[in-house]
Image 1 (cartoon, rainbow, N blue to C red):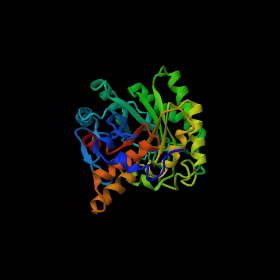
Image 2 (image 1 turned 90 degrees about the horizontal axis):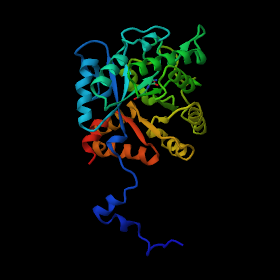
Image 3 (image 1 turned 30 degrees about the horizontal axis):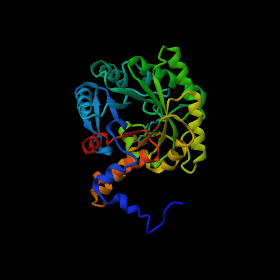
Image 4 (image 1 turned 30 degrees about the vertical axis):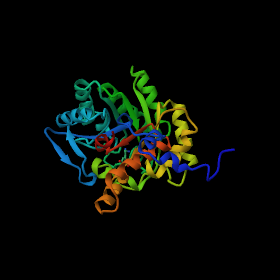
Length: 326
Ligand code: PBG
């Protein structure tokens, strides 16, 4: 039987600075972090994104020095989003070899072979209606016809140099469709990190401004998940594992830590989480209002993701964290 108070005192192991450091069960390291990048058309453009303080839109040429600076700070994994020149109902600009993401991939892969290049695979930035899938005449988001288009987008990313693709659309069967397309295209080494359990969340607001991807009608609740559902989130994630996902992501992060922790007990795959735009801005707004210390708040939020089971964290704060982590 374990000792009880007063023989057992949990505070003993907190009584010395060094001992506290030695007793840390989880840690946050630069290698756990993935930084989102927003590539836009044009030349010599670098503009702050108003909704996402401290994050910029970059034309491809301006992305290069920024990535170099990130690598110097020890942040070496990036997830790319693109804002295209044109949009149409099918989101065809998403698979354009001359699109901002594809051009950025080619340049970055050439200049920085040490960088790990991940891409978000979705249609919402490329469709004029802003939905993540193809829409029928009746306004329904059509699952099966969307798969082929997503696979074509993923293939165009692999051809341009992506090491990993991350489907974020939440159609059924997309992981299998992407795996087949990548393998058939000769990209069996390109891995898939699926946005496996992705909630229809209020916390994507600032991102939709940044990516110009808000749906033009309706909402995403027929494909993204209901925040009420935990068991269903596990089914979503395990289905993606069966279809061949290499890494499973849960999103958002802070509102889904329970799902992350439960999933950790159900799969042997590496897990990721995405500390999304609204979660980040919630912390920043609170700090600006003088309600909490920004650095401690951000560190604690990310450490909680690691404690819940995340191997990797996609975060807009990666560069700040790189400065703060010892
Ligand atoms: C695209 C996508 C979204 C995010 C990542 N990929 C937006 C959405 O699903 O509406 C959100 C990221 C964030 O809020 O930081 N489907």
